Amino acid sequence: MTHPFSRINPVAKLGAALLLAACLVLTVDWVSAGTALLLELAGFPFLGIGARRFWLRTLPVWVAAPLTGITILLYGRPSGTIYWEWFAVRISDGSLELALATMLRVVAIGLPAVVLFITVDATDLADGLAQVWRLPSRFVLGALAAFRLVGLFANDWRYLELARRARGVGDAGRIRRIPGQVFALLVLAIRRGSKLAVAMEARGFGGPIPRTWARESRFEMGEWGTLITGLMVGMIAIAAAVGTGHWNFIVG
Image 1 (cartoon, rainbow, N blue to C red):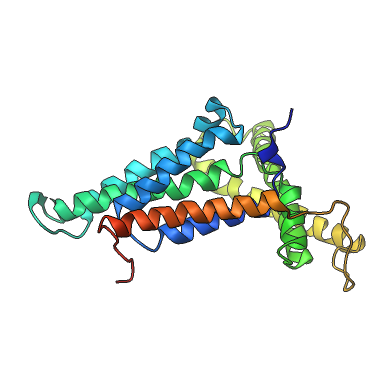
Image 2: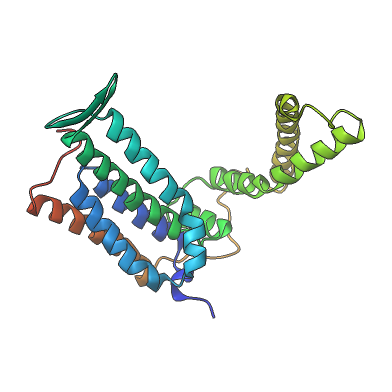
């Protein structure tokens, strides 16, 4: 049985993630980011996403956040007590707090961006962008077609390897072959893109008249609720930072 959240319009999920991110980028402090992260982790189990699927899809976020924090820790602006110093590296009270705030903010912004789109179909997203957000259909359909072709790159790369080995030039020097193979893949992608563009033009995708859509993209109460939820999480995080005195406006 399909989970109700998977039927939410993808543009509502995109809007919720953008609203939350807009709230969190206004300040650099650990209280707002930590509050948003706690609210997100409390709500994710209700989205119908299994634990294994959640951790596999969000693994890049969990890896990138500590790496970002370490960079800020070592090279952030020093303030307060300096605990260790070596050339350009300075670890101080200020860099410690900034590293924690940055790490939490990366996770708090990255997780919704990944989790909300786990169940999104590219065609549904394109329908929503064109019908609900009124983006140009020519741009939306072109992007959708390009996205559908991304999955072919891995196959093309494998076929190029096999073709080179069949000609006796792919048995050694794997690293040296990469630039030439990348160029060959680029040429193949350009040729396929040109053929696809001609085919789409022949089918009237670039016509001047308003186009019709096979599936109607709806924006109803569930979608509005998703948007409001994303905004509320961001506003609660901001309120927590202001209330505890940790608000640090990013352009201040």
